[in-house]
Structures are given as C-alpha cells and as structure tokens.
Image 1 (cartoon, rainbow, N blue to C red):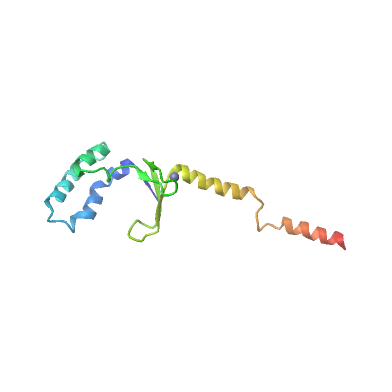
Image 2: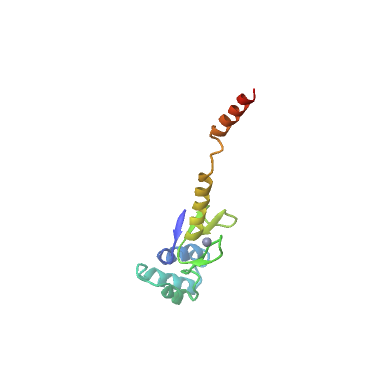
Length: 130
Ligand SMILES: [Zn+2]
C-alpha cells in the first residue's frame, strides 16, 4: 500500500525515468539528457510544470485516476501488487476509501451471523411448543 501524490511523483521522477530508460536506451542522448536534468532538479520545491518542461509531457507528475469512481485526484492510494504487467494493482481515492469503510460500518451494525442469540430464541420457541 502506497500513497501517490504529485510531490511523491516529483520526488521519484529521476529514479523512475532511470528505471524505464537508462538500461534500454543508454545510447539515446535525448533520454539521457532528460535524466541529467531530472537528477539536477530540486525535487522538494520543483513543480509538476518544471517536470513537464524537462520531459515534454505532463504524464510523469500529474493527477491520478481513481479506478473506482474514474475521477482524477492529486492524491490516491495504490493497493495490491507492485504495479507491473498483469499485476493485481489498483488505485483508489480518499472518497472511495471512506465509502468502503462505511460498508464495513454498515455490516457491523447488523446482528453478527455467528453469535448464538437467534439460536437461543429458536430453542425457547420449541420448548414452549412442547
Ligand atoms: Zn474514487
């Protein structure tokens, strides 16, 4: 489980770029130039726009889609496997997580299915019928 924010994406952008391109595209001067610029970036203060200006698109530091409500948010939680091809990973916003907690709360407000109270009532009814 991991919280993904615009800032966390900026903090990890050079590492993610290196992982994606440094080995396979080591001969690609443009990709290596971008890596050097990302490494120089002050990631504590840099903005998403700074990252976009270096890379040329905004997909490396941007709002992320909640897979439950399909809306985009600055912050989402990654759940499940580490993301990879065919991994069981999902991303959920705070609103949807709160709705999920409400489902647990609603379920807990109902009589517990393994408690014996209803069975005791049944036995009482039988004994009265005798
Ligand atoms: Zn959502």
